[in-house]
Figure 1 (cartoon, rainbow, N blue to C red):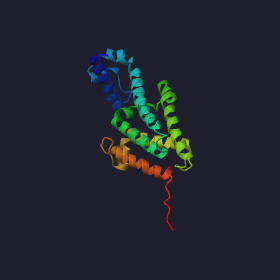
Figure 2: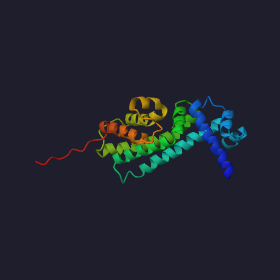
Figure 3: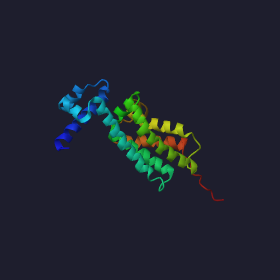
Figure 4: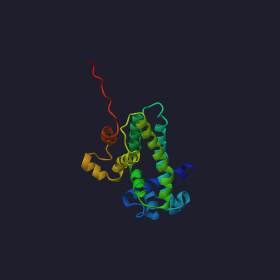
Length: 211
């Protein structure tokens, strides 16, 4: 792909993320994307085969990189405790989502709508994510690092905490008094999640008292 072609494609991607984020996928037309990107409508058909293909590209691109982050942490499980692995995974996920917060909001909002594309996403990307999370949680439970718990419920609760700021940034601002675009958002929100895990999941080490 030539430099001009890559630039045109990226302009379409950036424009679609902005418009899907502000107006929603169904509320955005191909002409609006073309106008925002300052390209010809035909370019969208050429590179993405239309608006649906463009959404599929964005969702796939987001989850490909998202899963690579989780898998990189998962591959360290033999070198780290399950607790350390889970904490690092959460930190990296939050950073990735924060760096791509507009795209994250588009993706998380669209996967709440039942469609053929979303069913495919659930079957491929989210099934892999569930496998990695389940493995880490089971290891921590079996190694005695975690309290006994329902793995399915823990995955749902953890996923909800990770996704929620990017779906409802106003609510996060009201409750935690932090803004999604702040540089320190990840650090502060990470501490909120870890505080919850310390109470709900992690076993505390009992210090031996010398007699």
